[in-house]
Length: 346
Image (tube, helix red, strand yellow):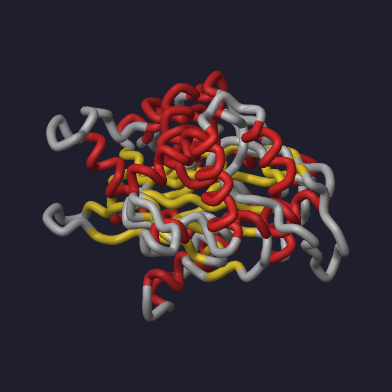
């Protein structure tokens, strides 16, 4: 459910000095505070691997008060892959201990949530199937609801993670990254944990601008407080996944055209609709899921409402709009199955 999140607290200048001094960091030695934070996190990680300082700076209007933003990895806090809503109290208790240990005070009651990452982990045991999945995901929409598709993922510092098994979709307020957890560990030079093996992760990141908009009482806001407990909710996570992930990855399993044609032929759709759906699938297979929208009417192009309707029609039949190509091969495999179950479900 939860992967990582970031909290903002206000502390005194003395608290900031105390934090660095606990780990032997002389801040005035560094030209930029960010460099001092990087050194601090190296030492902090050895003692508290689930925590990292994101940034700190002096308050613009209050003398002696500083912003401190820190990141928490819920998986590392509990040392297990499954994090449930019922685990909230354990997570909160650990954060309170961390804050008291470093500042002598528990600032948790005054925190502000500035980012939270939801995740759904699915096990794909067959490496051939994992490779096929990410090849098929390359045909996802280039842009959806302001999210633009990027070939490679990025780490928490914004640096690209150049491994093939990833899909990255981002905008100013939310980000979706789909990746092989094993390959991510390898790319970062980290140890593969037992709960990482064979895992494909669908991770949705809600950034500060989105949380701010949800806090509003008007203009589409939900009046939702920027508090960890508010977002530590299975129901809320499912709502976000359905709204932000399913329209990009789609429901339905993956088929080669012959298998998809059989399902369509046995459906209750009209003969004309069946032929239209078949052409729709073929057009996507020759480009990507946006291709039918880019073609002219004479070339078989369709309107956005028709595009949405065809996607709904295929979903009702359990067919993903992305086909497994005929005679498809890669450096690792000379052939692939004619069916691949869609691992994403909610």
